[in-house]
Length: 350
Image (cartoon, rainbow, N blue to C red):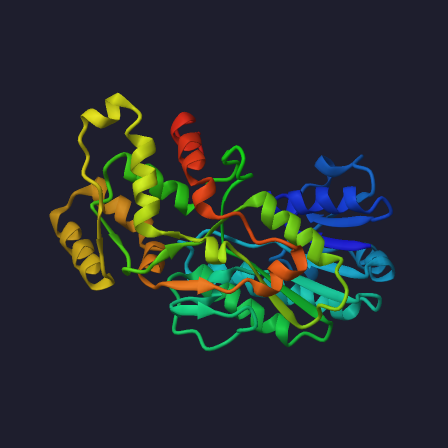
């Protein structure tokens, strides 16, 4: 039996569907807050719990049943809001992971634990980031990155065999359609660009943006979850060599915007690319002006935009070899993502 956290999320739900289709004998226990919504789904047993509660909030009889049956743990749940204070991010991402590992240690049949992390545990590191690397960061851009790095340290010290899976930023459901189900900081940034509220973007000359579609990540996790012989390995589920240069991404975005005559008439200037020091000066200057829309815009960007000025390339050789192909290059679908965002006006969630 598989014990899965994060089944209600975009990636967790997609992984669950793939694994159930691939293995008709698979049974899955999903940790959820509202089991009633999950009842009746074939081969899926919802168990009431909470990552932030002692013992995940599992009833004693549920823990006993899981101890008898669970042989694989996939921990995909996380608080992915970049703007959280560190203590709040840790409550879910670090302490929640600690609780999952404690249960995995207590369940005698567990053969391995798979942990869905993020490639951005690399934090402020620059250059080539190997899949095998787990230490040596130079600080973090936000609390999410730090909390996920701290959680990885717990996983690496765990008593059960482990595999760490590190996606980069999920930006759309699939590359063919470019549709977006779950909005994040990237989509928010595109909206701010569309409104002309981003006068400057921090970026190094050789910086790229590493993005991935949800269907690639979910398929990769589902495949690697059942692959034998991977204990103690880490895999980047990233665009890697297919990441898109910041300037090219901005040009592609502007071309989509410009298809709308009304938007063109606004004659909004493209943001200037600048180093972190210049961007910090801009932030201080806008704070001094009292321009609230710009202040809100820059505050929203400040939790992730500095990554654009910290150029890094995620090596993906290990994942590519096992999966048989790399992630789709960002250039192949980014325009469709922007087209979708413009067409639906960023929905009601952005």
